[in-house]
Length: 564
Image (tube, rainbow, N blue to C red; front, side, top):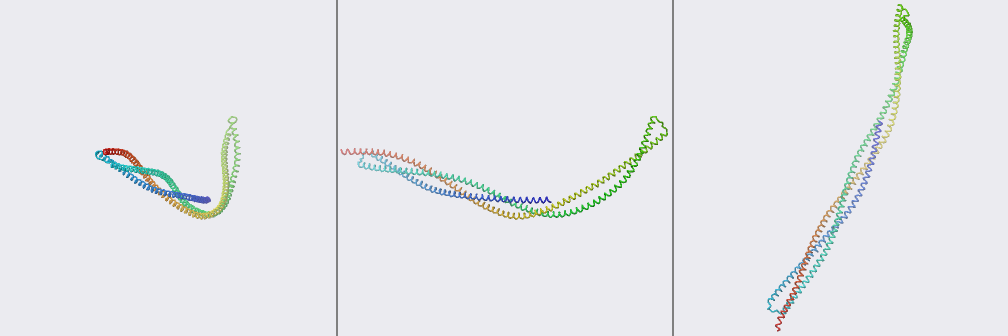
């Protein structure tokens, strides 16, 4: 009983220790949750800061988009300039065509003049006046001057157009350089945006990993909360078990009290029984001892009488035996003498000897019988003595065993009384402990209910905060993802627009380069044509001068006969 009660007490103490350890672990976990919530708040502030940075970057990207729109407007302006340059080139080409047409018309006029000159040469017989020649010469001079002035004007216009084209080309080259620089800057910005995008992706990956870690932490915390709930249920079960154990201890205490009363009654009954049995045993032992003493005395008297008679008979027999021995010795001596031939043996002696021998044998037989009787009596005496000693030993042993049983019963009674006192003390201690345990259990149940209610509220609060934080985090993550998607789309569109503009710029640059090469070729061709035209004009001038000289000579020759 004491061992069971001690085990129950130890179990209760262990359960209370476990409960205290669980409360400490729960408080530590709540502190850990608070630290985690603090870290989550810090990380959320960090995410908000990153979101602000991303919004600033989005504003910068919008500014970049506005720059792209301005670049597009500038491209339109440049396209307008290029179209105006194209119109100017078309006008220059038209002027070039008119110049070539004038040149062809001048060639035609020269051909006509050559034909007229040939006609004039063929018709030498006709008369041409000097005035006509002067008029024609002046007309041709005017036409040549006009043609020369037209050629100079054309040359100036061509030079101006060439200068304009060269200036435009320089401007275009400068613009191309600026555009290439801007393209480089744009490419650098694209690279910067790509690096920022990579950083954002890395941050997104980090955010995803942080989210996974948070989800893992949340799952772990939820598992811990479930475990705490399970442990709480187990604690409640253990508390119920402790209450059951306490109730059992109370029942066992009542049973111990009942057993104590029963043991008291049994001890009293045993003491009465032992006292009665002791008295009966003392009476029986006294009666048996008296009977044995009487028996022993009677048998002792009989044995003493028999021993005395046997001693007397033995004495007589020993005397007779001595007598017979002496006679035998005498007879033996006589026999020896007879055998030696020293004496004479007659019939009387022989008969006497025979009688003596018979008597001797008879006495010897009687002696043997008496010895046997003496031995039997001695054996009976020894057996009676041994029986008496055995009875005495048995009596002493019985007395000793009774004394031992008496002392054992006294010791048992003392031990039972001690056990009874110990049980009383233990029952008192157990009742006090049980009362203390009951009060402590009541206090602990109240505190446990309060702490569990507070913990439930805290856990619910932490769960709500964690859910709110998770919702905020998911919203922030969705916003960041949308921003990233928008930024990626904007970057893709911007990259496509930049690639398209760069492609258009490159195509336009190649077209302008081709046009410049074509204009250079046409300018070279026109310069060569002008050189050829100038050379032909010089030849025509020389030819015209020669023709004028010839006409003058003809006129002089024609005037000479008239004078004569």
